[in-house]
Structure formats: structure tokens, C-alpha cells
Image: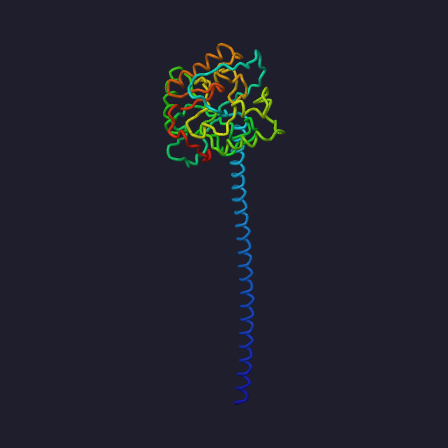
Amino acid sequence: MVSSLGCLFSSQAAVLIMSIVNSMEQLERGMQQVKGTILIFVAIMFMLLTACSSTTSTNSVNEADSNLQTNEVTIDQATLTNSTNSTDSTEPTDSTDSTDSTDSTDSNLPNNTSEQLTTGGLEKKGHLPQGFVYLDEYIPSAQQVMGYSGEKNFVGMPIDGYLAPLAIATEKAALALQAISDELEQQELILVFYDAYRPQKAVNHFIRWSLDEEDLLMKESFYPREEKSTLFQKGYLSKRSGHSRGSTVDVTLAYADTGEELDMGSPVDMLDVISNFNTEQITQEQAANRQLLKKVMNKHNFKSYSKEWWHYTLKVEPFPNEYFDFDVE
């Protein structure tokens, strides 16, 4: 009897054990299936995240490309539309101009005039020394054609220190120019700035350029009748520029309604005797336009320079003996 019960118990125990083993095997298979499902889910999520990241990256790249293209258009516009800024030379002690005896009767010089450069969309760094300001904040109606920040200048490349096509000047000069602008408004005219403050590093760039006798890339456009080696000697360029003191501007006039510049007989920064204020190479109308500019500039305490009809310096400068070298940005 006992033996029979033991056999029965052993048989049931064996069945139970087998059942448990089968259950564990099923559980293990179930866990494997769960693990497989989890792995598939993780793989799907990874693929979705990768696809999302790729789309976001593509959108970012497209946006960056769009911004780059916009910047390139702005730079290209600056290159294509900027006429060059004037260079400074030894300034006269008064505003009296002299007639250059070397004028010829005919000039067939190239026309370097250009269209307005819009600066409203430019981000200003604002790192200006005390006493300096951006001119467009004082004279928003004025055009700015800042060729030294591009390639349309007598060097043919961006000039050191000009990181943006912005006109900067001392606040004292800006206030005087603001008064000039207000007066010109009554005549339906506006100011056009080609240069204002100029870093000393830019002047040093001119000096290095002048020593390279083989670089005549822009000769036909800016100094066709002059030898490059004599530009400093003749006063078209100077190793110390009044522009670096912050109260000198290269400026002309334009009609307020169209933006078209008045005909002055030669482009700004034409390094030639035709740019002398009293040259005999220009017409009476062109001479009258130069006189118009000079009259209003002199009235508001700017003195002229005989060799460059566009060049004016505030008579009483806030920094008469200091030459600055911060970047235009």
C-alpha cells in the first residue's frame, strides 16, 4: 500500500515537474518574444528619430544655405554697386582751393559711379570708442556707398579694417552733417557718403599696395593717367589720413526722389587732376554742382581739399591729433 502510494506520488511529482519545466520554457519563449518585440520597437523608434533628425538637419542646412545666399547677394551688391571711397592726402591749412596747372583739355576717363548701397539690414557691432557714432543713425536719408568693404576700389579688394559697409564718424561731425542734411532737404537733395572714419590699418594697406609695382589691376578704372608710384607723392594718398581722426568724410549729393547723384565731372576716388576742385576739364554745370556741395559744407564748418572735390574735414575736430585704428563693423 505504501509502495503504491509512493509510486503514485512519484508519478504525479514527475508530471508536476514536467509541467513546471514546460511552463518555464513557455515563459522563456514568451520573454524572448517580449525581448524581440522590445528590440523591434527600439529599432523602429531609432529609425523614426533618425529620420526626424535628418529632416531637421536638412531644414537647418537649407535655412543656412538661404542665409548664406542672402549674405552673398548683399556682398555682391556691395561689390557691384559700391563706388570707391576717396583717399586722403595732406590737407590744406584753409579751405581755399587752387587750380592745377597740369589739367589737360580732354580726359576720356572711365566712369566709376555706382548705385546706392542699402545698409539698413546690416547688423552693427556697436564697439565704437566714446565720441563715435554710426552716421545712418543721425542721417537716415543719406546713401552710403562704402567701396572699401568690397572690391570696387582702387586696390581691387576689401581693405583692412573695413568689415562692413558702414559710415562711422565722430558725434560732433555727425551733428554738423545732420544740419547739412536738414538744409539740403529743402532743396530736395540728400548726402551720399563714400567714406568717413578710416582705420589706420586701412592706410597701411594702401602703403603696402603702392609698393607692389606689378599690381595694376584697377589702374584703368581709378588712375589711368597717373603712375602708381607717384600717387603718394602727388597727394592722392597719404601715410596719415585725416579720415582716421574721425571727422573727415568723402561725400557727394544726390536727388532725394531718385537717388541719382549730381554730375560732379569725375567719380569719387578718381585719382586724377580732373578731381581737383578747380579743374578746367569739367563743364560749367559740373563746376556749379561742386560749388553747391562746397557752399553747404563750408557753411557748417567743414573745410575742403583742393585735390579732391569730395573730401571735407570738420574745422574744429574733437580728436585733432589722434589716429584711431578700430574696425568698421
